[in-house]
Image 1 (cartoon, rainbow, N blue to C red):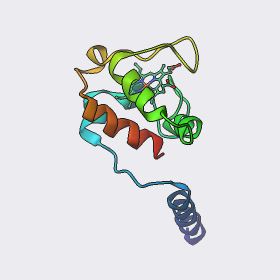
Image 2 (cartoon, helix red, strand yellow):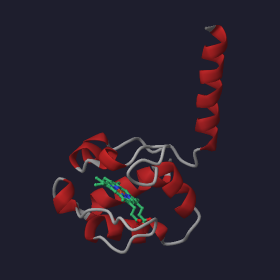
Image 3 (cartoon, protein in one colour):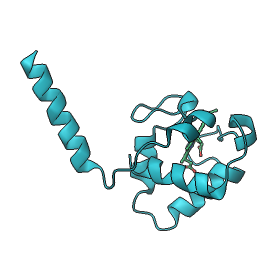
Length: 109
Ligand code: HEC
């Protein structure tokens, strides 16, 4: 049991170290838009994991602008054939500010 605790603490410490920025989860928005219906933080599910997405875009200039626009208006698929549904089909319209908050959070994972 002690070993397990040590392992968990170690993993948490590593994760905190690896994260570029600590952005708290915008839980209300994530729930309202059902992000976790298709995404998980670290396992590919119906969609790429937020971790994969962050890895892919973290160092790309303008990536967050592109992703915010895509979250609000859709766009062509970058990962496979299945595109992401539009906000109207996810739970309601998404403001530019909310899209920004969500993308900053995704890219911090
Ligand atoms: C109904 C399923 C579904 C829901 C709900 C969903 N996504 Fe996605 N998402 C996808 C799929 C499928 C892709 C891969 C699309 C592609 O190939 O570009 C994706 C891709 C993405 C990408 C990467 C886009 C790109 O161009 O590479 C981001 C960022 C993202 N989702 C964020 C979110 C956020 C934030 C939410 C909640 C507001 C959300 N998703 C809700 C299915 C979903």
